[in-house]
Image (cartoon, rainbow, N blue to C red; front, side):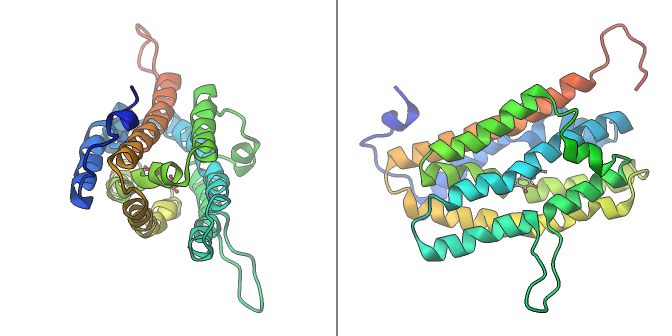
Length: 252
Ligand SMILES: O=C(O)c1cc(C(=O)O)c2c(n1)C(=O)C(=O)c1cc(C(=O)O)[nH]c1-2
């Protein structure tokens, strides 16, 4: 029996209870606890490991606006589409229009992050070096949103409730431990902290509005768990690819 079926017929949780459950799941499964992130924060990563993470995370970043376009196409409400479309502009940037200058988006800022760490943008854009498991994880996320209900697709973005605090930790750790990365590279995270707070609050509001039954709420938790697994798998792949084979001297 699926978790959604298990919840059928039961009383819905209050908003507060649902949020407590999301928080408890995040405590257990969000990628802030992944060993690779823990090593990143301790300053234990080599330049090669950090570059591998930046390159593979770029594959995630460039697929986020595609995923948001898939969600946009599912929203049958004009007001909602007007709001959700902002996410695509935040990542892709805005073109110059009617005398207003254009704006760079998150994808451009991530390319600059790569450059600040010594990675050529041509390499990042080529997709070369993206690990197979990272491709599967990212494709899994986009397809989850493509085939799921609007509620499930929006709920899977709720991991962003926990991303801003993680980014604040990341910024401090990089300034302290990885001074070889030019500070301009941190701009992606600095901008994303407030965008992530705003986007996740919007998504949470929609989830509370749409998840009326216990079965819906169980679907929200399942979508959130799935997304935690996407982020965790990405880091597993990077961790595995950069691991020093047992017995080798530490050449990192
Ligand atoms: O660096 C991170 O730890 C992190 C996590 C997440 C997340 O939890 O989903 C996102 C981001 N960053 C991010 O930069 C981003 O643009 C983003 C969009 C989404 C989403 O699901 O729509 N998550 C995230």
